[in-house]
Length: 454
Image (cartoon, rainbow, N blue to C red; front, side, top):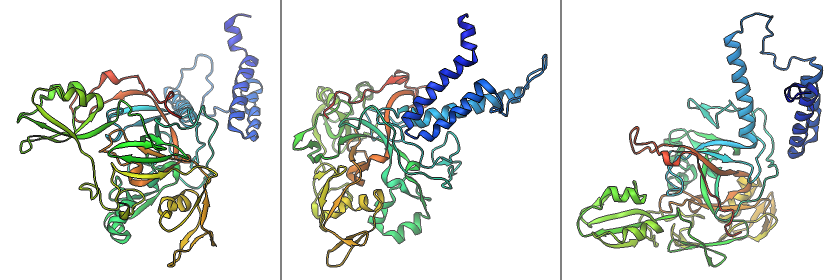
């Protein structure tokens, strides 16, 4: 038998696809799906059912129907791409500058779901190739839902990993200001005002919350502090990754820095010359950019912009856990203990704000606190709580231009989607065509923290 005959042999095809299907079922962990082997057998061997019912069987010499051929190609593409999106890779666009200079606004990524293991869809009835909206309308149905389940991956999230996840505060969205953080506005202006002027609200299931991408700086069980912008984990200073940038005040001798020089070292936007300084009151710089800019002849001084309490840019209650008496800012906060699955914490009215949203929203318990400070969970008075999931603390590499865990708290393990694998397209929104094309970033492999601290 020739190789061509072997390739087209129906029994060879049946054995090959059956083995792949059985491996998929084992990975899935639901052995009821083994009944699908009947379909595989019939498709390759008995052919009693026309599974591709949209296909037309042509008589000898009959001209193929172009419309049906296109329909077949579209259906095949939808099935294959949907399968790949669920279990392997998914396309994602960087929506903001929070990860510069590691990832840029306009980077189009493939997100690898195999690293941490793909989640099975909790809201499976979704229009193909959409996430939560299409033409401004909801693109999914909650008629059928399932509980959270994650398949086996290669490893768990590590410190330093760049992670794509569902935005925890994205479960409630304001229809007249969809980019705003609903919970932040409620804290600042009250629920009634927020819903009146920005509502009504849309409530989304967890897997339909918007996607965010940040760097994981602390994992479950860690104790995190930020001191003058430097992250400390378990009392030790964390390494500074090459893409991490801070805001600096750059004073010059009176002249602007040549913009071509700034662009050359990677500072393409996010700064404005102030002749009254003279210089730049806020310029985002990585460690390597900082060293280069200090060498410029017209640069007099470069000083980091560190937020002290009371902060000029943060509301008094903007920093998690939103208690102004802690006097925390985005550059000085902590210590914060990151909850771990199976760990038990003692509760009181002072530390409860750290865990309130975990107890009520993520782990679905009823929580009540009486006027005299007694805590009731599911109707029973208690002074402790045991966590059901691991949690993570995420921060953007663009540390002074990132709404991250400092402003909304922990990311639950069930919100983790995957890790960026490759940039396949990159367009600079600040420039016009063709100068907006970042050709050097096309098909760039994104290095994650495989060798980072555990």
